[in-house]
Length: 164
Image 1 (cartoon, rainbow, N blue to C red):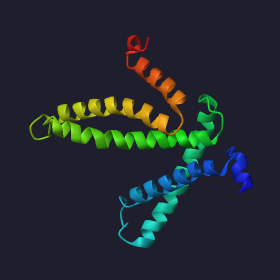
Image 2: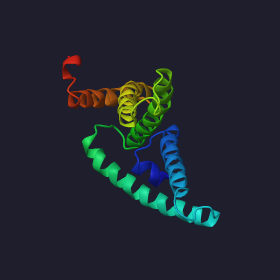
Image 3: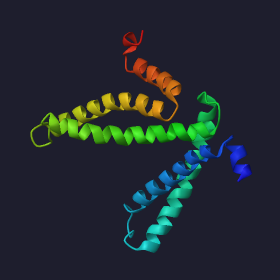
Image 4: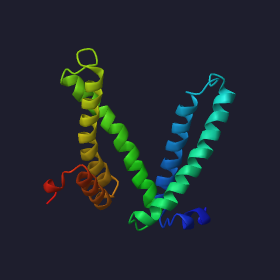
């Protein structure tokens, strides 16, 4: 355990919460993906699929950590896990908020061209994604990182004039 703490630069036991949440979230995602694969009705096959997906996605995630550790300005390595958790929660939350809002506006696939429906859905989702990213970043103690990230994103969208 000390080796794990040292490699992720964890000084306090409460910081172990983020790697645990990250591993559980990855495991749950792999389980949900495995259920989409053929022959996953059998629990043994489902278990095997989940383990294979988990090992592949864990390797990809650790590779991403190494790449992003140099690009992102974080004090400790475990903060990268916290940032990934914020991105995951924000993406899911923007969908959960976007669906009721688009329904409240009376926009459905039946009364609107499906292509236009999805374009509006994505636009509404993006608007709430920006707001939620800052909010969840603040809740997880990474406001400065996400505020800088948000400013870069808005500049890429051509909205630089609103930042000054």
